[in-house]
Amino acid sequence: MHPNNTWDYKPGDLIKVEKLGWPSEIGVITKVFGEGGGNPAFPRKYWEWTGTSGRHQFFFEVKSPLQEDFKVKVLARL
Image (tube, rainbow, N blue to C red):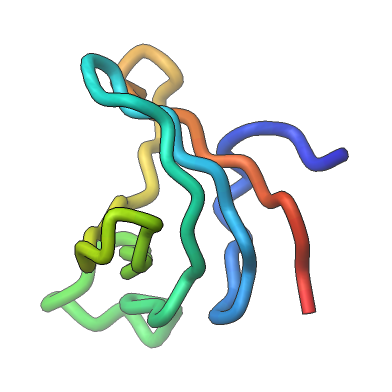
């Protein structure tokens, strides 16, 4: 099984997201932003995902474990 917060998510990945103060949710990664090139518009990686609630949501790469208020785990990968 994959560990939490690996920051290597790809479109199509089935994920489980646990956010502080929210119920956990299963979803699928739909888009990735800021993958490279040093684009100042995207200084870090962002992932868009759609959960079982039907909402489009996003999370971003956090460099310090002290700033993490969510856990993302890959459940299945294409």
